[in-house]
Image 1: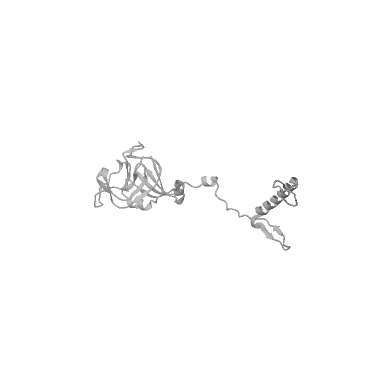
Image 2: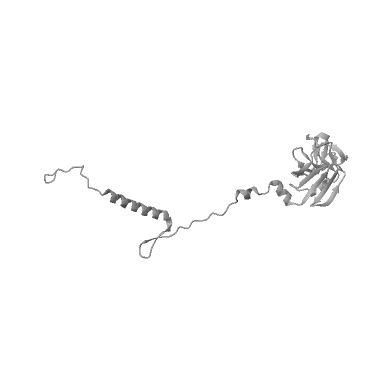
Length: 208
């Protein structure tokens, strides 16, 4: 009590609500404008504030889905890497080493599978294949209890490829049979030439 007048904690000053709300709205709007400008705010020569435009970095363009879809497949890449390829004629038992449409060398006669296009594991299948493996060393061939060298694999599903005639453990030829005699592979009397010509990924076209 002061001077006989009681004080009450419930007494609050009157506020002009509409004016206060307007002031708060203006203050918030200004604050948001400054924050939105980020580092673009700098002092002016007169001591005020100048809002400068914010420069943002532009990302480098990336490949579109269409561009990615147009990328060459592994098979296309192999075909484009070299114009050289090998032609295998299982009717005439000839292997042709090709450069585009030019025949560089013919190797004949060669041996092909007893079965052609039967789908069996021991069949020589026709179609377009690609060289996937090369092994020059002498290796044992269990089905014939003999050895082969200069292996150039091109049909992984049937384990078919080019290789030498059958040899003994010393590397001497013991069976130079040609025609329809193998378990699907292409046996040849010039295995070194085919091995040297072949490249991983090179197309091999087998046909009648």
